[in-house]
Image (cartoon, rainbow, N blue to C red; front, side):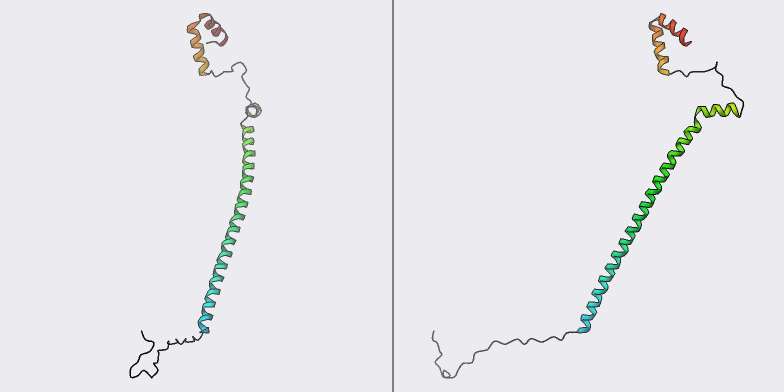
Length: 145
């Protein structure tokens, strides 16, 4: 290929297209929009901060209530154990017999004391009675069976 074209217009310089420079438009800064966005951002940060403070305050209040309830529970448990001891003392047979003797004029019958038989002992003695008549005789004498 030839470096130049040789035709009628060869002597004229060929104008080459120059690359079009893009003109950058300088945007005007809209300060009202910037201020509005900054105000919204500050407002959001403040709302988040106040929400965190409110949440923290409620957690602290709940913790204080929990501590107070635990102290109250400990006090009530101590009082409950004291009342249980007092109830056991009031239920005691010595107290009942002393009130019966002093206030009601009753006496304890020493010759009519009954012993509650254990069902296992009764079954054991029944088995022994069947196996050995001598042991059964002794049990009859001792336990009045």
